[in-house]
Figure 1 (spheres, rainbow, N blue to C red):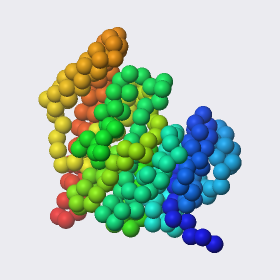
Figure 2 (tube, one colour; figure 1 turned 60 degrees about the horizontal axis):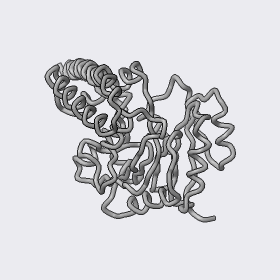
Figure 3 (cartoon, rainbow, N blue to C red; figure 1 turned 90 degrees about the vertical axis):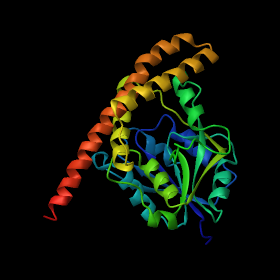
Length: 292
């Protein structure tokens, strides 16, 4: 029996509206030397029924037990291949060589991890499209602040053994992975010709919740502060860039919406970061107290 070269890990929960497209694109790739491992965290729709059309192994996790870093580490530990690919269940590969392009870069001796270029869905709101164009350009390199992004990505298991996913916070496990690898002078390669479609039209409440946990996680990951001044500076900068983008695309009404949306975006991050800093200090005091 032929040894499989790569394991593709797909995390799911109630993705029946998109998972069939994701898996169809995956199994239509020119690169075939992979096995599929699905990690489902309590789907109540027919997600698993649709996935059953494709050969795979399954790990089931209770919804209340789901923690991104913990789930990812557990899934990787179950694999038998050195090449590990992560594919979000709502991420669709847009060309038949996408996985091959990603794997070819990951196989290079000097490369430890890789991540793909993402473009927003056709129905994405203008601000979402702007953010994705900024974060995932059609260039050789991603922005310096984009360390790693999981929707379509890969890592060598030998690298993961030395640097597993972060579990001290609920979010930004991919950011922490990329940050750690870069600090160890390991190469994390952005693969622009591995092109996928992935985006979310978050509501204001969803933006707040997501940015709060990202801010909280970043307080643990980075040794920095995010003050009111930093928040206002980031708000002004992002608003200015929104203005330029909406003028360029002739979507003038969208800018008025951006005034509120970007404030919530930055304020939630500030509140989350502040909460994370407080938790970090309490943890340090507790640790210090153990040595009294």
